Length: 253
Length: 134
Image (cartoon, rainbow over all chains, first blue to last red; front, side, top):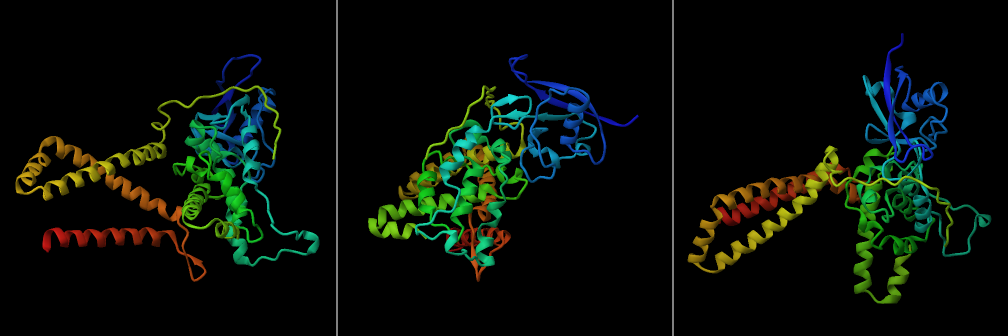
């Protein structure tokens, strides 16, 4: 018989239980099996009602984020053999409300993301019809790292500030704001700063640094937030020291 | 701009008061935050010291007596440990917050950290010279 490992999976069935409960499942322990493979095995052979999100199986789509042994991970890139002999705990992403089993409600992030205006803002009427915006490799490098975010929400699950204060805008949203701020085609940094300079913006962050550690795409949201704090502080000093007209023109890039 | 997001019924979880005890990185973070109190204590201690020096020989001797009491020694030893933690952790975090570009290339983080230790050593050497040697 094959070697097995126990997966302790959080089940929450609002129609049956009032709170989430861990349920043990034995699954085959195979070298090439990920936690997601284990969940699919349970769904296929043990309980078809087990609910979880997944799609690409290759760390691109960002759907299959869960807490594995307490750490936020993409389950498609997390191997069961690394947790042998087990048991391995599989829980819904921390800090988010649970809808069913391993599915969490991400609507809080969906509300916050547009607030930081993560798109290119121009202060002229130039559109793509007028031609391309050319960028040098250096200009691309300036923001490329922050553009790798796949919205998997692992950073929110790792962030105790977000867990304690759900009003905090959060790591991914700020990293995405930074991504557009650093883009040479964008003129919207002033508008984003107006949002992020508020109490629930960058100043909520206490630099725990876990968001960067768990990021599967090496985006470094913690770095983005600290750089934003510097920008916010510089703007506050400017606001006190400089005449209004000068501030406005210099606020844009 | 307005966004409309459909809310679904869900189970809300609460973070435990001891969320920081179970994970090493969270524990270190909370200790780093706590270390700020001890930094503040050393500032107060330094101000007390300066006041004693300014107050003449009698006050200075009284301050030294108080400073060598077991309570002060223990508090200062603990404070020193936290100060070392404070220094090491913040120095280590600096490159993440500070992006330095020289000649079009980003200065590696290890150089920024090393520069801080060199700065710390230089300031310490100057203070040692000022207080002990000069």
